[in-house]
Amino acid sequence: MMWWYGSPMVGWGALFMTITTVLFWVLIILGVIALFRYLNRGDRSTMSRSTAEQVLAERFARGEIDEQEYRQRLDTLRGVSRPSVRP
Picture 1 (cartoon, helix red, strand yellow):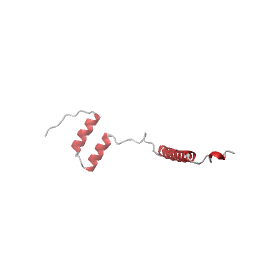
Picture 2 (tube, rainbow, N blue to C red):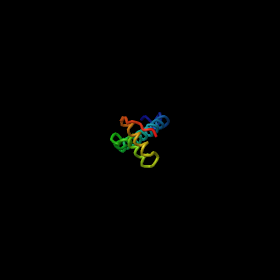
Picture 3 (cartoon, rainbow, N blue to C red):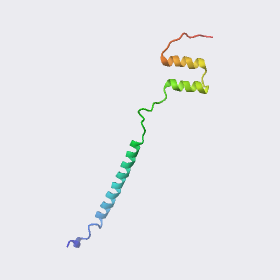
Picture 4 (cartoon, helix red, strand yellow):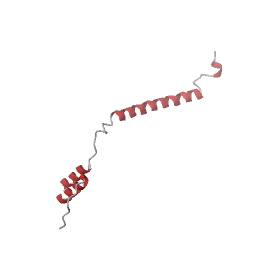
């Protein structure tokens, strides 16, 4: 018999087994979390951010800018040159 030197689960063997078991479960949990985030991230590639024209239209709708400023900025965004009229 090999019991002269003690059970293999005494001392360093038990410590090693405890550490590897904890690491194993941590990796499994992190893998599940990563998979969940990957699958639920949504289709961000097709989700478009607001364009500059949309932001400008929203500012006009909220009354932050008047129609003249809206048209002027819209023309600037679109690259249309209009003659400027000075009051």
